[in-house]
Length: 119
Length: 111
Image 1 (cartoon, rainbow over the protein chains, first blue to last red):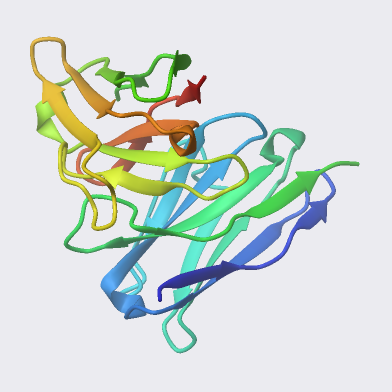
Image 2 (tube, each protein chain N blue to C red; image 1 turned 180 degrees about the vertical axis):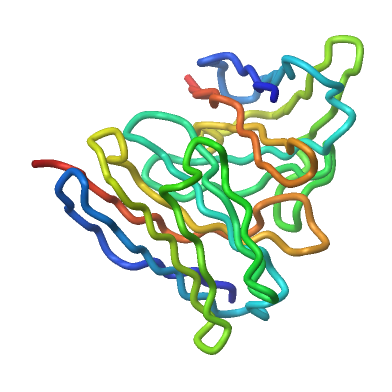
């Protein structure tokens, strides 16, 4: 059974940095790109970017460029998303999602991590 | 860049057929595959259609997808609606095969 298990909810102050983890089991970690998606309360999805765990190459959405860093640790099968300079509109649920290198869809999703940014 | 526009909400009764549209603002809808995701309240999304019309294993054949180049749109059709189909549905495609673009989502209510 494939599982993507994310770290727990976070509360951060404006200007701080948050780092969320996503541990994979049930598939070969390096065979799937790992994407990160933001969902603000009651809103749709904003794609943030992805990492190729095989070589660490990253692609980021223009909206988050400069504030987001996505990494992958193949030794533990864990991906990370770090978002800096947090502001109130970063309050959202963040999902990791694995996409097979031979697929077009985001096949497997984590359970989501709620990040609240509040002073 | 382009945006994918979906109706904000739709409603239908059990047993009926509903179609959710996803219109691409610029560039051809056929230039990049379209995927559809279902997100039930409080849950993570799951794919229900990939590569315009293919169903992942385990997705019932009541779900079907298509694209229409004349209207530059993709559609998700759900037939024989069931109460458990009540969810938010999102279309998704790619910009330059790399950047992921999501539609704004459609809230489907099964009355």
